[in-house]
Amino acid sequence: MKYVLVTGGVVSGLGKGVTASSIGVLLKSCGFRVTSIKIDPYLNTDAGTMSPFEHGEVFVLDDGGEVDLDLGNYERFLDIKLTRDNNITTGKIYQSVIDKERRGDYLGKTVQVVPHITDEIQEWIECVAMNPVDGTEEPADVCVIELGGTLGDIESMPFIEALGQFSYRVGPGNFCLVHVSLVPVLNVVGEQKTKPTQHSVRGLRGLGLMPDILACRSTQPLEEHVKVKLAQFCHVPLPNIINLHDVTNIWHIPLLLRDQKAHEAILKVLDLQCVGKVAREPQLSEWTERASRCDRLKTPVRIAMVGKYTGLSDSYLSVIKALLHASVALDRKLVVDWVPSCDLEDSTAEETPDAYEKAWELLKGADGVLVPGGFGDRGVQGKILAAKYAREKNIPYLGICLGMQIAVIEFARSIMKLHGANSTEFDPTTKTPCVIFMPEGSKTHMGATMRLGSRRTFFQVTNCKSAKLYGNASYVDERHRHRYEVNPDMVPEFEKAGLSFVGRDESGKRMEIIELPTHRFFVGVQFHPEFKSRPGKPSPLFLGLIAASSGQLDQRGVIISSTGRKLKATEGAPKLKAYQNGHLMKPLNGLVNGHYSTTGNGAIPI
Image (tube, rainbow, N blue to C red):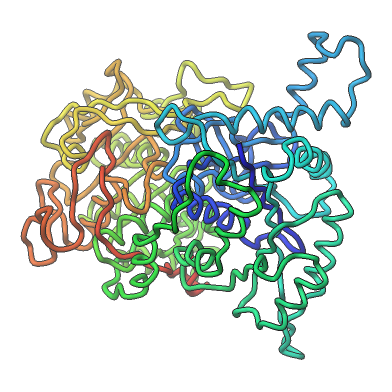
């Protein structure tokens, strides 16, 4: 097994996750199997109990692991399936060591950070790196490890020590350290400054790690004399100074690495010929096409994202990526309008009327509405108003997890005239509980007590829009993360009133997908389809939302071209291929939109 460690210095937010993912793409394109590990030095056991404002979205894996959003980047870039063990945290390591101590595994020894914690880290890495992640039974050739945080963080020190030991443990030719640093430009002098990177590398050396490759982030391409200076003072060969300057979209990053021969540098450090494979030149034609055509999309599709965490786009990162994948496949330029759900409520109209008017203006100007998952009662009334507006005005609507529950509550209040209808999450004493706490859930412990991971949904109606979008499949496997569900005792009343529950679990008692048959596109799902969306394999439900929002979905749920003709596999873009378990078997022939718009913030690179 070969290991590539990606660390970061100077400041946080340099893009270590994208860099690590892009290195994985580059090595995979050279013919090697690649897996990934993310190390998060926080004490939490996993990301499940953290607010999205703290650490961005919680990404959910097939095995139910609640992990850092960077694992979502790895899965999307490399098209692999990771496990909860691919996300190492300080909490997991200490918990494992303490459990061993309680069992007496250390035979009376004094348990210390060195060697017990550091040994546990190394053993965890070695064990997880051998797990197959690409659908085969074969282990990976290369494991890309990203160390979260910034060099010098006190909580990272045990991991730094462990990785220093690990580099000697695996031996020369098996370990490559890529250090991501910043080369800033001061406006006063307009000169690229190398001193922050020099200090960062010096600090790294002082901790026992020697960088093999420097990945230098900058706004503009590095000048040649700057590279020479970095090589001289950081003791890194000039060919191993890689510049990752700002680009229009992240599809360029693997191409930047390839163009600067980063793969050759990594192959040389890792002596990858010895794994029994002959490295080929990187095969990145699809990535090249995406990057070269990314800015050509002109026709916009506006999606109103109605949520409570709209102040931080990373809170809904996978949803944004899934929207992007679908809009690209359907030749539309994605424009996301962030609508704080609380700003849609009547109380805001009295307190801050400008925010109220702006929120409603954005909602009314959207081609489609999406209400993502969330927890807590803040902004719930605003989400209900958004669902009501979409239903009454025949605007395409996709509700995910809480967004589905919101749609059910709104339908009960508006159509069934059950004005007290609510979720027991928001009103435990409601007399009309449309949404209830799941019996297997825990009300005393928050972490890992929800319904998590991949679960099977069976279609009850074969001619519904959702089933057709999934390629007329009889069932789909999607990832879940919830502790409340639609009250099964009220389902007959809902269906009698016109709300169709087209997808259920294997027992038939747990509601998974709802639709309004007479609506253009009004779909709610209890699962999170965004977690399995890929650039070349968009989520079918997101395809449906974008198609309906751009006039490319007919009343039967069939995606059509802009001229009104049903698209065949051999004509136009996208070229739709066969589905399996809800995902396209072959990449769509589409473009990649390099930016999405955000209200008040302009264009943000994806």
